[in-house]
Image 1 (cartoon, rainbow, N blue to C red):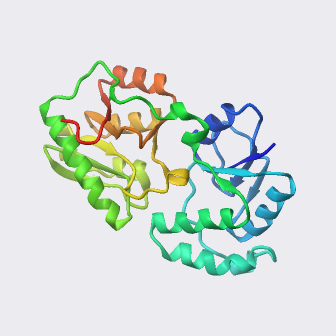
Image 2 (tube, rainbow, N blue to C red):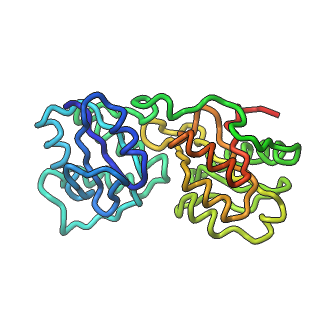
Length: 266
């Protein structure tokens, strides 16, 4: 065994694990257990130093951070002796934006001799070919909304606050913040339904792809439909698609457009 998954919530860790020739060591963050995958061990931020020592001790060389983990707080009373030296880096990470925090975490693993690999590197078909995947096709308004969404995401990147937005009739109905895509979709104004709005999702400019590449799955499509949206548009090469065939079938069933859009596409 040479691969460990640093696993959070959702179906991505199980998808990555299933694609490996040898079962990886599954290390789940406490309170963020992955779906459909039994952890071999759990850890907290305050015990990360001990986790790193354990990984090296059992011959782990590569780690893949996959799944959703809420931004943790640091409880000094729970720090173990191996983790205490990492506190200055933790404080730097907790004070930074999303990308800055992830850069610090990536550096901690690499400083201990571990290679951080992306889920898309381990499972290349998580990134699907570009094009409209569904029977329903984008109309001219949706194409304009998708272009507007791409521009909004580029703007959000400089603020380091989110990877998704909702656009209808070229108006911004919502942007993803710390609550994630689910929170975005459940808090949209009712007017988005009448606008045939779309969810646009893509990585930030300068995204740390090995750790935080955005992901959608059947749950995203159900939430988009429940919010009254007309489609989901993701950036080609920048968003992982869990259960591709199930997503396409579900989008067709719900009457949604599912579009893997090339940058700059009309």
